[in-house]
Length: 109
Length: 115
Image (tube, chains in turn brown, yellow):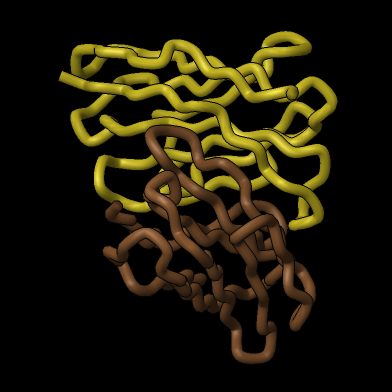
C-alpha cells in the first residue's frame, strides 16, 4: 500500500527560526513529489521534485528529494508569521496523488 | 493568473439527497481530479479524469459517486445519496499533463455539510 508520512505533525517556532519539515514515502510507481501550503482552503503549490539531489529554491523556502532513501525535506529560513500553515507533501504515482497528513507550522511573533 | 474555480463554496444538504459540486478547471488543462478532506484529516484522492473518462479512482469513489464533463468547461462531481460521512471539503484540481509530469492546481474547495 502506498504511504506518505510527514513529520513532525505539528511545530511551533518563533519568527526568525529555521524549520525543516520531513516527508518519507513508499509508492509503487513514483513520478514526482510535490509540496503544497494549505492556509485556509486550497493547497497552493510550492515545489515539484522529480530528481534526486537537486535543490529547488523560492525565496526563503527550499526543498530537496532523495530517491534512494525515499524522502524529501522542506526548509524554511527566517520564518515569518505568514508562514503559519499546514504544509502538505504529496507523491504523484502516475495517475493520482497521495498526500501525507501534513505538518502544522505555527510561527509566533 | 488562471485558476481553478469551484462552486458553491459551501453546500448544506439533507442525508439521502443528491448533490452536484461544480468545477471549472484551467482552460488549457486536460486532466481533472477530485479530492476530499474530512475535517482534521488528510487530503484523499477520489478520482482522475481524462478524455471524457475516468483514468483512476480510489476505494472511496464507490457507486454513489460519479463525475462528468457536461460541456467544454465544467467538471462535476455528483454524490447520488449523501451520507453523514460525506461531509468534507471537496477539492477539484487540474493539470496539463499527468503521470507526475505537471503540477496539479487546486480550486478553493466546496465545503459539503450533510445533516
